[in-house]
Amino acid sequence: MSERREELKIVIIGHVDHGKSTLVGRLLADTNSLPEGKLESVKAYCEKNAKTFEYAFLLDALKEEQSQGITIDAARCFFKTTKRDYLIIDAPGHFEFIKNMVTGASRADAAIIVVDAKEGIRENTKRHGYLLSMLGLDNVCVVVNKMDLVGYKKEIFDNIYSEYYSFLESIGIKNVDFIPVSAKNGENVVIKSENLKWYNGNTVLEEIESWKVVDNREYLPFRFFVQDVYKFTSGNDERRILAGTIDYGKIRKGDKVRFYPSQKSSFIRSIEFFPSEREEGKAGESVGFTITDPFYISSGELMVKSEDALKPFASRKFLANIFWMGLGPLLMGKPYQAKIGTQKVNVKIVNIEKVIDAVDPQNVYKKNKLDRYDIGVCEVETLKPVAFDTIENLKSTSRFVLIDQYTISGCGIILKNLTDTSLSIEKEIERREKLWERGYITKENREEKYRHRGKFILIIGENVEKTTEIAKILEKRLFNSNKKVYFLSINSLLAGLDRDITFNEEIDREEELRRLGEIAHILTDAGLIFISALGSIDKYEFELLKLLNTPYEILTVGSSKTDINLDFCYDENEEIENVVDKIIAVLIDKDIIEYFI
Image 1 (cartoon, rainbow, N blue to C red):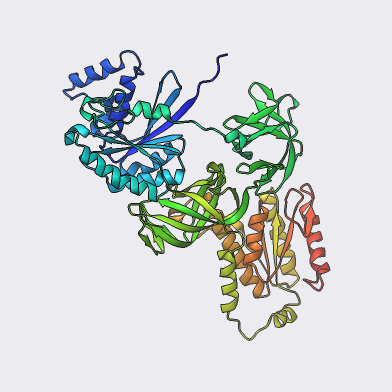
Image 2: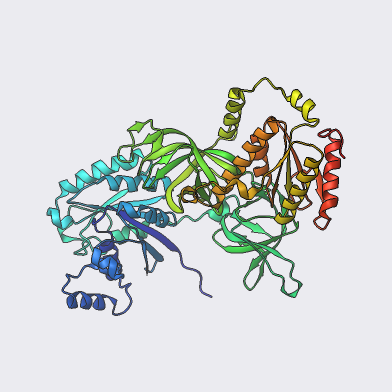
């Protein structure tokens, strides 16, 4: 097999109609990288339809795109030189499609920013520059296009250079080369321009050929987000394969690994590559792993090598730069979903430290929301602990997107972990307890009157029908013994929730737990024995319930298949009446009820 050639991925960005697609089309044509007959067929199509041929049409293959004259989605094309292979990503310039540009740029090694010499620098040009600074690309150049429309005047180029170079430097993008071109006429794209003799620098092709590809990912600390878990049952195959793509580092069979945020540890048993195994895996490869321990690992977990000194964070709060693209504003306290690697987690913005003007970074505002195209430094809080790195350590595992009503509406980079600060839910509970106004009847009065203590009993298990039936029979037995008891089905919790204003199943789950916790707190405070049942609950969700039920404790009953410390554990195959008898015995033993008849 021949040695694999070096590849450089370049994203082309810029304001609408500044000539991005024309530049790429010209680059492909002048390097003889087009499929045979492609140029002629596009010219023939234009002649047939009485359209003036443009090199942009070589990329805009869709009829809809040609009729609108804009690039709607990121078009990808390839060309090669004797030095290496190139992947060109032609990203859109319209505001409506910025999120597509972000998706394209996030996979790029380098960027070309296109500026129309006649129109000059626009607000969108500066926004694109700011986005590149967030993505941290090392190789960037600015192509000042349509120099033919301004008479190839050096002073116009110099003015654009002076203004935009200062702007890019202010946001951390330095040592950027500027190239004057006429993409339409093919000047300074591949061939030097006779009309731009005052310019002594590189052509566009020479510039990108000079860029260095420094792919040191395999020498960085190991990072692997579990994308999915596969189990094969045929042929007595008991393997559970953790599948995904390695972001950074190298790993070998036998290496000790740790998972975040679960903090579980194991060893690599095998590294699976179709159709066989390998001894080693490295950054950029899509692989499968099996581990020596049989414990459960879910998708979204971040696997690292235990020996690596740089550890990721596993936290519920972090500081981030967020670029907002949603039609409506980003609001504090509103639930959103974030995707970090393969993790999907519910989040909310608990504080906006400042809002930065992407057009003029010197302008900083204090606002309680992010409007469209605002960039904010925000404190983000998650429902459950999430694994991540900060941008100064590892770029890929510090990036995330925000989803609002099933649409990607924002992107961000994590600046800092905020584990040591108190969570908003804790502040809410503290405030609730301070403001809770009670009547003249004390907790002791109720216990003496009812002859039992108030208690929240939570029954959990994989068989939802069984846990619900246990709860109902327990309620009936306690009620018949004159106990003040109430059962609430988990299905009843969201009965009044308007599905038109909810965002996704995960956020519904958070609302479900919040309602359950608040109801449990009220009924327990009223001295009742409150019973509910869940099919399953993880330790983070359980911690939320415990917090909401403060200052009262939860009596947990469940099957053995759970990570939660149970007060009473029953066998999944045990008869329901026997389980209820044993729960009542636990209530008596813990002095929750005095006697039972």
